[in-house]
Image (cartoon, rainbow, N blue to C red; front, side, top):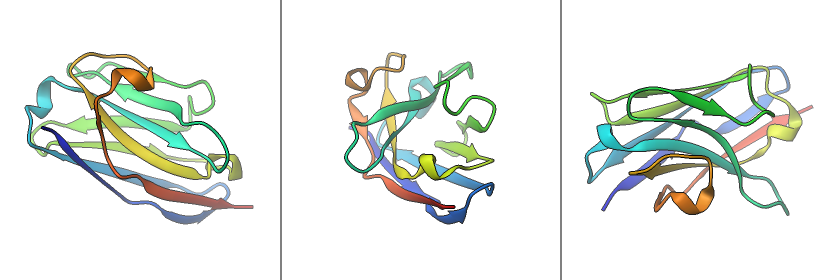
Length: 121
């Protein structure tokens, strides 16, 4: 069973930056694809970014060029560097893990509890 714990959320002004972290335990981190998803108020959860075990990445169009996902297998941690933040990036951000790959929420069996990101205008 994989446990995921996110950290790094908070309140930031538009145009600012935040870095989210997700620490994993209980599994072989290096073989999992890791993803970030987010859920804004009254909206469905949506895909943000994913990084495969070999390091290849994929992003939602809405964050491409502004967000960067990375992983440190030695630390069992995945990061989401968020730059040029916009008010529409406000959401609860979730870390997820899968032995497979992809951007579909249902493909990820392991989830963290989420961390709030609020971007003020």
